[in-house]
Amino acid sequence: TETGSLSIVVLGASGDLAKKKTFPALFNLYRQGFLHPDEVCILGYARTKISNDELRNRIRGYLPHGKGASNDQAEDVSKFLQLIKYVSGSYDSEEGFRSLDKEISAHELLKHTAVGSSRRLFYFALPPSVYPSVCKMIKNCCMNECMIRLHRGLDALALWTPRGSDIGADRGGWTRIVVEKPFGKDLESAEQLSTQIGELFDEPQIYRIDHYLGKELVQNLLVLRFANRFFLPLWNRDNIDNVQIVFREDFGTEGRGGYFDQYGIIRDIIQNHLLQVLCLVAMEKPVSLKPEHIRDEKVKVLQSVIPLKDEEVVLGQYDGYTEDPTVPDNSNTPTFATMVLRIHNERWEGVPFILKAGKALNSRKAEIRVQFKDVPGDIFRCQKQSRNEFVIRLQPSEAMYMKLTVKQPGLEMSTIQSELDLSYGQRYQGVPIPEAYERLILDTIRGDQQHFVRRDELKAAWEIFTPLLHRIDRGEVKSVSYKPGSRGPVEADQLLERAGYVQTHGY
Ligand code: BG6
Image (cartoon, rainbow, N blue to C red; front, side, top):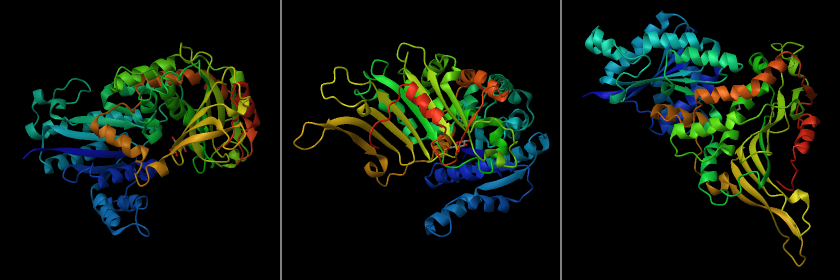
């Protein structure tokens, strides 16, 4: 009998991202039964000449194994590794990609894949410089239309497919590519890359991954905002004073200095991860949950952001950053940035959205802080420091809490600030929270683009930052220094204060 088959190709299989994120995510999907051995094969592809077993051993180190792993887990690891094969080749030679196609086709034949129902997923765990050539190679050598060739020989009619379309889409077949950031370095390079890839693949085949969109509490944002009567009337400039979206890491560039120095914190974190979160916090209610409806609203937010002002940007670089031998001594690349984004629309006019990201700080944390305005005509003489604040902690220890003013328990009529607290670890004890990559890879298999970045969204995101980035690259905007393990430059706290943020009590 004919069945479907699913071939997952991990390009850049011996690299860091593949080992640390992609393969472990595939393993978790396998364990939960989403990747069935009757259908699936996983193919690693990279330049290094190694055997199947060598790749498997490299991956094994990143999966639960050895001490602490249960027997079940160890057995699952072995079975999972057996699904993986390796093909070596360069990223710009047809030869390598033809061998890859041969492997995929052999798998499809083995699984008696029906004509038109082969599914091929190509995951780019690669530097973006090779994206165009890899896309070309896939298009020339590895599209699922090859199945048709195998079944029918070289029948000209059978080979004809409209450009980039999925042959057999009506029978469940497809070819999809998943591309990682950094997607370009500025507006122009990103648009050029989009055009090059767009000539080969259609938008529904392209999954631009931003792993922050796969985080549990980021996925929760739309539910929170649009399924709760509490928030609907409050979520606007009349009630909200300022919004902060913060990313901190307590380690530096650690061995990634060479990569990082070319990009810096704005391209690495703010232009993608934090901006995506901002979109979900600020967007209007979409017509429905269809990916296009959601992404339409996100684009509108991005297009409403007005140009950044120099006095609302603080850049920092931690002391010792340039000691990394792969970083030039005179590097001006920021490892820290705080900036105020302003959205020019009816809902948000006048509300600062403060984006803050930094490496080598005093803690590792990502959170959203929505700070409300003071209560007008206050009769309790509350301090300014008792403003209402709604905090969504994305990591670590997912939580949401609402800071509010209550009567201090006791005989006196005085107020204190307290919290309504929903900590996931307590409330959903024992419920595993999936890894971002796990969820997003499953989406690519299911064909759901809701949590992926559309081309126009990417363009609008680059438009916001490109002028500033160019000025930083030219050395016209300088980074100030800060001590590793600190809160970052004091100038950033001063900017926060100027933007209206008030440090509240507690938590
Ligand atoms: C990546 C950045 O996209 O995100 C890294 O390139 C950063 O610099 C990482 O460390 C942070 O991801 P997470 O999920 O650990 O917050």
